[in-house]
Length: 407
Ligand code: NAP
Image (cartoon, rainbow, N blue to C red; front, side, top):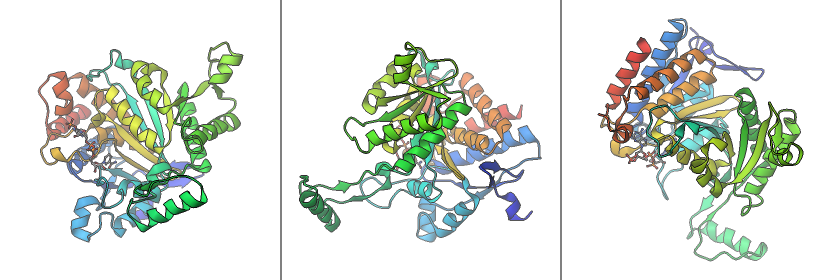
């Protein structure tokens, strides 16, 4: 088959997935290779079970991270970049990013390369998981995190660099602010267009998936022209473009006696720090959270803890044409090569990938099978230690899951 026939295409805003798409995969660093291999086996099994041999993914392994550094002297070689631009969709293991020094995040680079502006992280309690909450069944939220703006653009200068000195000079003399001479500088850009496009995507998702509440998360009381503007622009999209679907909290209180009219989605906003306590004290109030990049990163790990562990969460990075699907957690290096890591996060990312390309039946097989594993208390050590059951190794977990899928 010509490789053009294996491309996922975009036709008038709809994805067209061939029966045998080529989908790149980066195995990643640390525990990445082990867990990514599990996810591939599980996805293949779910696709086979759902479509027999009519549909099948052809995986294209791309070099990146530590492995690519050794082979190509580059953690994100050109060959990987070219393939990604061609195929547009990818399953990805976690990649390392050093703290405070060294190379810039490849994860951020990939998101910017394909303009994957929405990081979507569903957090839903799975029956049987050990949660710190009294009533974890109330946890069913999806986080829409802006992915291309805010502090993650990485515009910053070391305190002792010439550039930092030049920026400080400009700010101190031209802008009349006072920044001490030993300060590193970072820039926090928040764009109207970037905020509006993720707000649009989140609201469309809420409508399509029957979500009831959209909460705009921000720290606009302090950062008025960045986070405050995020709040304002998100409301603008909701009110100007989705009027017949939404009502704001203010309208509910003023026009509807505090009761949400049937069939409408409530749009409200909350200050970020408040939300960290409220997702714990009243998780049932949160449904879809729309957040700028940094807040979204923090709140998704906190939300993951509500259902027991971030090791079980998968995420999707989506753009208008492209997607990278990965676990929410990182490389957990201390567990690398030990056959103890939990592969559920990247398996759930595989489920999101299948849903995104329209292979819902296969996605459903993964979802039901993972739920069954947890119900039967077949889990890896990170979860087993709380459930007080004997842990399965990474491979054993996968074999058990494959057995369930095969039945
Ligand atoms: P992390 O790798 O997620 O690990 C933090 C802790 O979470 C681990 O020590 C372990 O906890 C637990 N954990 C995470 N995933 C697990 C799994 N699959 N199975 C079992 N336990 C798991 O976070 P980090 O230490 O902050 O980051 C390490 C590196 O990963 C950094 O270089 C960071 O930049 C990178 N990272 C990459 C991505 C990505 O590629 N998208 C995302 C996040 C972080 P216990 O110690 O409690 O056992």
